[in-house]
Length: 361
Image (cartoon, rainbow, N blue to C red; front, side):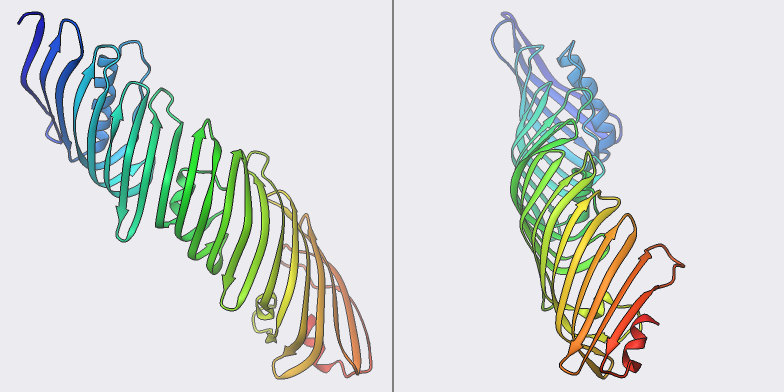
């Protein structure tokens, strides 16, 4: 009609996904086409949107969003082919994106052939929330994304689905900052706190740090990790590409029981320092621990100091125990693999060795 194509409400129904399109497409000027899509199977809807965007943007390489769950999209197609854009709002339930669970999702933004720009993004699982701005690369193969916002008490294990950390982290993660992912490399910075968590199976009450990301490298500054009365602080640099690390950590109120064997009855608290170098798979550790009072069970055996180095699975250690009446020095070298006996030598003066023999038994 007068150079304008008018579409009455057109419907498409697969059983799991319904879609409708209506509006105006003029001979010249911008189109205005209302789009409504609802789906109980976002994997199916994901394939349909890929086909639709391919038709609306001929010549462009478009990708799947890798979505699962259920949801609906309402928006308006504007512009002209092949450069149509769709400002709109998406709401979903039990949503998974690239294998990461996001729960209930509410987002508003603009979709075109190359990008999805979500100016407002809200995801919620129970009391856990993510809020911010998200941009996704929709070209084929899709890999890039960015986030600028806040995270509140989100499962830390989900982060590994989006960022290759190089180690396993669990707990409730809260963060504020920005990150850009492109071709498996990351740029960004922010602050992170993890509560009731663990790193590679070692549990803690709370950990926090400032993070700077540059490509495959991550710098963790102002690290503070606490467990009961024990505290560890320092800094760490990781390279997930070369799988290398370097760092320095200091600890206070460290329970000696954590460094003994099961049934060892080692008691006391220590201060310590740890230097880390080498690779993520086989790090080199240089450690010193000092405790003003060391006990085995009910027997107090004086002040203690431990110096140890772990290099390529081999441990070299020196232990000193002393008080004004006696002194004991022990040195050993052994491999961490199972089945290797504890071997070394012991020198002492001025004391009955009975309580200490258990250290090496």
